[in-house]
Image 1 (tube, helix red, strand yellow):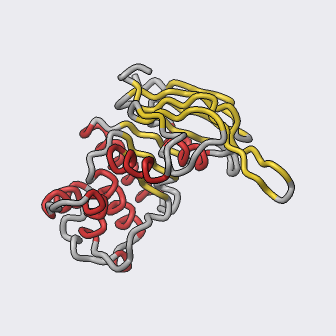
Image 2 (cartoon, helix red, strand yellow):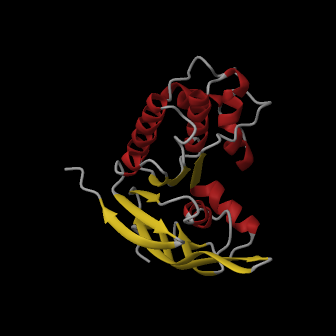
Length: 231
């Protein structure tokens, strides 16, 4: 695999055992993303988008196929080994924010650093919160923040480890139109500033077309793979 490729997926298949028999939710999916690239994965509900994102990020193991993340084949790793890779180079933003309600905004942002161990510099979290427009909300708890503000905290948290790749699962799905647009601007702005690779699952085709590439799924298979010109 070229060192220029941060995510390499080859013939990825995921099958679950159900009472009615095997259910294949992804079949023979292949693509590669260069470091620093941006890619959207789109398709109807049930097409396998979130399953694919989870496999790419090492949250789950494929039934068959290969996932190479930052030069490491993670499909056959144990959960602990995959967690180490995620802590090393992966950031996440989810649709439902997944903030810890008993922690302040700043404490939530610093959680990934604390998981790594060692001394945690509060200034790094405060700087990121300021970057996403929440410099004055460091001591607020999630319940004291709007949905858009909670998602911005989640974005700051995702970037605290300076990840090489950011996975976003419907990051604007729970936000109103204006807030969603502002959130998208922050995601792409931080992506450019920090040279992070972006893989985005979304129902929002306008958001998808802000990326360099749109992969479309249907019934677990890739039906189109389009490069987007932003000339």
